[in-house]
Image 1 (cartoon, rainbow, N blue to C red):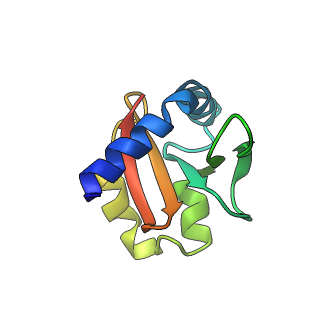
Image 2: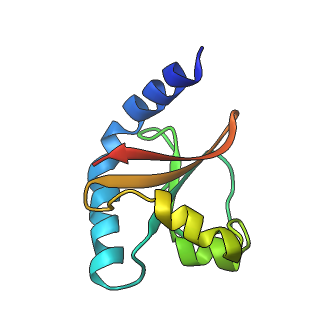
Length: 113
């Protein structure tokens, strides 16, 4: 399966999550928590962010809400790379920023709301 096929499959799997993630993104933005919400998509235990969705019978993936600031404080994104990240970050009113932890490793992807 090519990387594009895997991305398209993941996007399809995440379709049912979009409404919840969009609402959480709006809260993070509107409450001035961060201008850079990041949703961690995972299938293992994770000590980061705020748990939004637990994988189970309804959902294959668990989701935690986080922010660029938390990624920097935990040194997942180094301070000197934060401006590079910000320059590639897509408009959060239009896209959701996902940090996907899967068998492919860890990667940032942006999907349309």
